[in-house]
Structures are given as structure tokens and as C-alpha cells.
Image 1 (cartoon, rainbow over the protein chains, first blue to last red):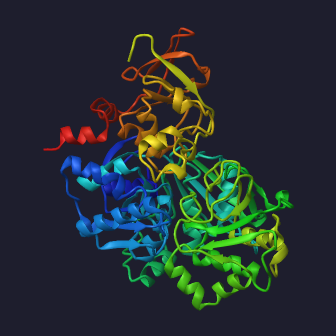
Image 2 (image 1 turned 135 degrees about the horizontal axis):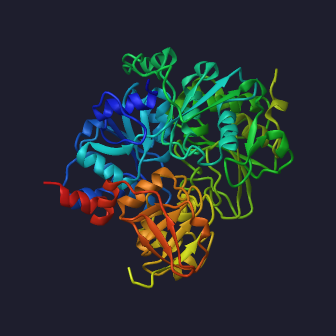
Image 3 (image 1 turned 90 degrees about the vertical axis):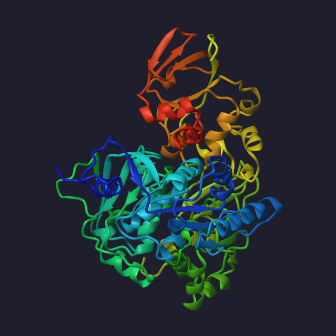
Amino acid sequence: MGQTLAEKLIARAAGNDAVRPGDTVTVSIDLAMMHDSSGPRRFMPILERLGAKVWAPDKIVLVSDHWVPAVDPQSAQILDITRRWARENNIKAFYDMVGICHVVLPQGGHLKPGMFVVGGDSHSTTGGAFGCYMFGVGSTDMAGVLVTGETWLKVPESIKIEWTGKLRPGVCAKDINLALCAHMGLGGAEYRTVEYTGSLIAGLGMEERMTISNMAAELGAQAGLIAPDKTTCDWIKATGGDPGDPSPWQSDNDADYYAAHTFDADSLEPQVAAPHSPANAAPASEHKGVAIDQAYIGACTGAKLADLKMAAEVLDGRHVASNTRLLVAPASRQDMLQANSDGTLTKLMDAGAIMMPTGCGACAGFGGGVLAEEEVCISSTSRNFQGRMGAQSAKVYLGSPYSVAAAAVAGEIRDPREFLKGA
Amino acid sequence: MSSEGGTAWVFGDNIDTDQLAPGGTLKSGIDVVASHCLGQVNPKFANDVRPGDYVVGGSNFGIGSSREQAAHALCHLGVSAVIAKSFGGIFYRNAFNFGLMALVCPDASAITHGERLTVDPEKGTVHNLTRNETYSCEAVPSHLVEIVRAGGLVPYLEANRR
């Protein structure tokens, strides 16, 4: 019996030749990524109580992205604790207010196919796009990793999600995610690992693959893997990283999957998920006419350079509707700089977009741009749980950057292809 | 755990981490987070839940963020165990790390709000005293039982580190 990519990655980290679903194994951690919110302020007291030192400061990437920039003394304190901990523990890979952890991590060249990585955030599934086994843990689990360099997991079964065909103009990775949420249900993967395959996935660039793996979290998957290939290696090399040999990190042809789903992208339309679940996704046209107070382009899910470009494609030569505001919080400083030099930012700002600092922003209601009671928002983020982006009665629709930009221009939800040439 | 058991607080499917630990409270300490725990679904819960009570959920209990305040808040309020049809994977780990037993119970929907329950984590059973019914749960991995016995991962590491 062959092994899935997940089983190979876990077996390597466990020091075994092979693992089987259901085995509980102890694994060595190659890299631990953490942020200001779940990071030092939460685990520092635990490390002090245990009298423990960090097992390997060079295997830690620390990112302040949730409470940035500080808006009150409490958030300032959280950022201060984070900086002090980085200094005191000699954490060299500390990214302070320069982007969202899931985007900064690969952009900094920290990920390499075959690695076993934990992240102190649920969207740590994003790292799976690089052929790493990466999953999210809470702060106490992270404290255990920091002390021992190890953690445990029950080897999950794998679910194969194959996409064939081609994305039509105006349709993108985010639409794939929302369609999957509708099809499998919120949490439908039940903490199994999903592996995305097929000709369509193979044809996607790394940013779009990151978007795909990112929302494995909403499927309830432990990890969201994409086998590394030339696209992966070229991207890592461009960051100055060393991708190594991707060939061991492929599923065997005779590997055993819990389930396999096949989808054809040819018929996929732009998707919009109604409040308060990503699983409430339907073609954008079915939500046509829903009036929008705020359109939000942000988060690791939906504000990378590729996402900003999608929004700019819709906004080019147009203006945000008078009854609507468009907020844009780029996913990283690097994305913002590139969008600046290639003209994308100008297109966004000419259209009336309000530029926000890079960071998690309004996505989880921590940063600027949160919603008032009864307000309606469309967002390129990953979750629209009730109350997450601000007031309890606010309503958040989820869509692609194309769909968010189209709603900003129209002042209401539309199929974004109405605004795209050739779509 | 007293012999007459604890009260069941019953919630539906997809109780997410924003409901358990609202983002707006996360700058504050666990007492503030806990005072808002599940308030959106049942405004009385945080105030009226008593130590030894049980939280009962449907599918995907604790889905969403990795914020462990979701589990910590329930612990802080004295909840003995969470019994649900299924759990968000990260929440499940976080619960045990705080010494909070999380039991996967296919019959969780048989429990009605206000019923009195006892739980035997070793046997993996939930006994409904009000109805005199017993429901079986999926076995809890032995290393997690040990962590709960120790009172959570931190006391466990304290006891097991040289």
C-alpha cells in the first residue's frame, strides 16, 4: 500500500518509515510560526512557570500582525510584550508590522517542501501550499513545542480534492474555496487532511495556491496540502530560499484516501457566501442587489498581490459607489511595494479605495475597519461568523477580490464579470 | 464531581470560536473573555453556569480560530466537560491542554437543556440522570486522558520534565 503526501510528511517528522491513519505519533518540529495575539503574551507565563528556555530560537518565526498598529494602550502592550520577548530570546526572524504571518512566512523564504511546521493560528493550513505539513495550534500547544521541539498528532486520513478544467475569466481560487465550503460543509473534512490535486491546481501560481490551502481551515481540515512542483521551487528560489528536492513529497499512485472528490472548473461561477457561514456560498448572481455599506479587501486569504491586482482589474477607470466605502489592507509590505511599483495601488486609490496598514485588520475584528450594528459588508477574507468583524448584527458576505471590487463599484452585490473585459 | 451531577447547557451545531471567545474581548484577561462566552447564543450562560456543569454541542463545536481562550473561558467558568457530536480539531486539542475533557458523543442531541448529567471519562460514557439514559462516547486517546488527569498540559509538563 502506498502513502499519501500527508503520511510521508508526518512519517519523516516522526522518524518512521511509514505511518498509518489513526496512529498517534510524536513529531519533531522543523519550524514554529507564531503571532502577537496567540504568541508571547499567552505562552510567556507558561515558559516562566516551567522554567524553560526556547528549544531552538533559529526555528522560530514571530510576526506581529493581529493588533497592528496599536489603537489603544492594551494593544500597544501586546505588541510591546512581543518585541521584548523577541529580543530576550534572540528571535532573529521577527517581523514587526510588515505583513500577515501566513504571507510573510513564505515571502521570507522560511518554507521548504517536506518541512513539518506548526503555526499559532488556524489559517496555518496556508503553508500546505508549499508541500509542508503545517497546521494550527493553540498557545499552550505552542508552549509545549517551544519547550520540547516536539508535538503529537493522530495521523489523519487524507481526502483528495481534484480540480480539472480551466477557471473562466473573473473566477479565481477564492471561488473554488467557497464552492468547496458549500459542497463539503463548514468543517466537513472533520480534521482530516485535504490534498488538492489536478490539472487546474497544477496551473495555479503560488499566491492562488496559498489562497486554496488557506481555506482548508474552513473545511475543518488539519492541513491543506498541494504537492510541490516546479512552480513551488521557482517561487521559493525567487525569495532566496532553497526548495530542495520536491520529488519525495508526492502521493503514491496506490495511496489510500478516505474520500476523493473531483470538480470541473469550467462551469464554476463567481461565488458569494451569505452571512454567517462560508458554507452559505452560491453564485454571486443569486445575491445580486444586496446593498453594501463596506467592501473589504484584506487578510491572508484575500489581499496578496494577486488579489490586489484582481480588484484593480475591476476598479480600473471606475469609482467606488457614493453610498459604499472600500477598505484595502494589503497582506504584506512586500505586496504593497510591488503593487505600488506596478501601478496597482494607483488604480485602487484612483477608484476611491481607502488604504489601510498591512496586517490582519478588520478580518477578525482586531484592527481598523470594523462594522457598526446592521451594516452590510462584502469581504475577501475567509470567515463571516456572526460578530467576527465588529457589531453582532452586522452582516458579512464573502467573495473573491473581483466580487468585492464589483460590489464596491455598484454599491451592491453583482456578478463581477459584468465589470471585466472578456468575461 | 458531585453525585447529583451537573446541569447540561445545550447549544446547536457550529458553535464557533468567535461565539466562545469574541474577538473584541481578546485584548483583556480571561475573566473578561469568559464573561462574554457564548453570550451571543445564550446571554445567561456566562452568569448562570455553575462549576461542574456541562456544555453540550452539535457538530463542529469550537470550529474556527486557534484562539485557546475559547477553551480557556469554559474552563474558567468551571465547565466540567464539553460533549458534542464533533469538534473543531484545534479546539479539541486546546480543551485537553487546559484539562477540559472533550467527548465525542454521537447521541449528544438526545440531551435537553437543563438535564442533569454525569460523565465517566475513563469509560467514555455520559449518564443522563434526568432520563436515566447512558450514551457512549468515542474513546479518548490515553495520552490525552493523562493530560486531563494532570490538570492540563502545563501541569503535565511540570510533572514530567526533569
